[in-house]
Amino acid sequence: MMDNHSSATEFYLLGFPGSQGLHHILFAIFFFFYLVTLMGNTVIIVIVCVDKRLQSPMYFFLSHLSTLEILVTTIIVPMMLWGLLFLGCRQYLSLHVLLNFSCGTMAFALLGVMAVDRYVAVCNPLRYNIIMNSSTCIWVVIVSWVFGFLSEIWPVYATFQFTFRKSNSLDHFYCDRGQLLKLSCDNTLFTEFILFLMAVFILIGSLIPTIVSYTYIISTILKIPSASGRRKAFFTCASHFTCVMIGYGSCLFLYVKPKQTQGVEYNKIVSLLVSVLTPFLNPFIFTLRNDKVKEALRDGMKRCCQLLKD
Image: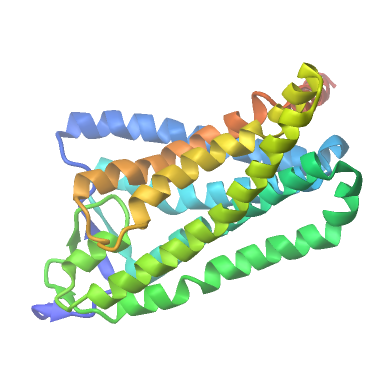
């Protein structure tokens, strides 16, 4: 039996309100989203690895972004589905929060890198292969992964040091940091302020190179004399720009605010957008208007059909 206050590491997630019938409908919807997310991002990773036409920095970064999308959804969605079927579930605090926010930080670092990559491709195409060489790309990805993991160690440690109420019931479908702070019996104001500064540093810090890159990209595109040239240059960046708008827009609303303990329903809706809808949409965003990816997919399907016939 726990004392009235304890430094707990395990929480009971209440998930979504509503009847069992509603939960079954939500389960079917989110399970479908999860399967499509896994299949779509896995297909992107596979075709980037096996198709020589996609052996370029842009697709190398995209494959790592798809890996992170799989990790984010796998950390959150199966637990959410379990809660919908069995009316709540238990979750260990430290590991879940560390993995979840680490993957998010890595993804934003990669989006910033991809923006710079698009800037070099559009504004300095003759030196693209020199600037974005394989060794540079590998090191950038390594730094992004390491930075994402290390940047979340202190926030998880600080949260773990708080004492919590006896119930340990969290009104969310995953261990959201803001809702965890609501359960704390301690004064969390300083920690919330530090988390706010870290969110500003990570989100705005990766958004600045994106804004600067796209400012130069748009300026360069407008100087292209032919309409077909402008259209081609625009479609080169359109997928990444769409992903940036969805990802940064939702996360700025969710994390960049001094008070981390916002309303539960608001938090759940924006969290669904970040953890379920965005990973679900990204494979479509990066493939529907990308001729190289569509050609690689068609060729891959033809090879698979040929192997099945043989």
